[in-house]
Length: 369
Figure 1 (cartoon, helix red, strand yellow):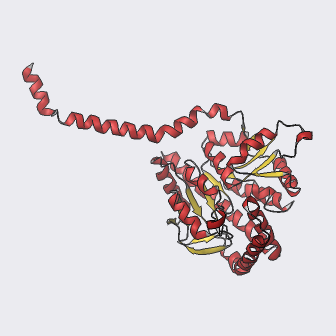
Figure 2 (cartoon, one colour; figure 1 turned 120 degrees about the vertical axis):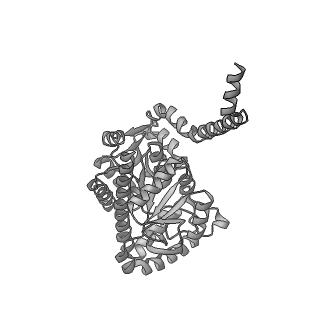
Figure 3 (tube, one colour; figure 1 turned 135 degrees about the vertical axis):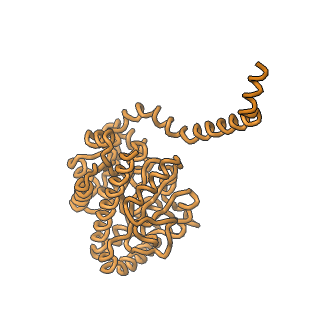
């Protein structure tokens, strides 16, 4: 027996075993840390179902690995006038569908967060939004709007319909593990934020998104783009130029700033997302897609002049907080005589094409696995 033990110790020195055990403990601890958030989300999925209504089409797509692309609803209720708002929303959905993906527009209707709207529901948001009867909803507003559904009409001075902003849409899409979310442009750090502290919640939500990436035309040009990119860097969000090494600024293709990296195709984008997911980094990815070149050439300089004027007017009228962006976008449309609206619609449609391509490429990678 002594000889046998001696032989075993020669083959596996005792000094190695504690090191191996310690290494295994560290790996186990790291794995537990990385998996904790996903395990929490799975345990709470049943309670989510009482407040979230997912359309049959979206449910089927998610179960069968059919690419789904999330869309916000604020662009319907607050971005344009009726019926152009609904027409644009439906055309964007059609672009995504034509690529073989399932669109999932998100909003709060009748006391539910709805993921995947009917055409009738889109039309309702458009009409009610034009009358000012739809609330812009970020993370902080979701619970109040859901709660308002239980109030009688006579007791209201509060709204029941909610259009999700970038931050709320991203939050819900991430809960549902929808891989791609397409929008026009994200919010960010407002100009003069050093005195107003006006910083969009979009940035915080981006840092939290572990399942969903955002495809947009960069940061809205009404914002302080440099400071916005600094905050995104601090929050660990990967900013990616799509077929560009310049960071776009909504109406213009080059803001004068750089993203943290770039990709040249939907396949490269999908590989980046897959690497993020494999390591469970639990941090956001923002794909910035330049506005189509012909629109920038036709309207870019003029829209920038209108933007500068609109910002001056907002400051003079002391418009602040959540009212700033709707005022500026509406005023820019007026000052540019509708040119900014046509460019806005074009870039949203372009983003939808790119987002669908990325969702399909990501699905192909998952299929290989």
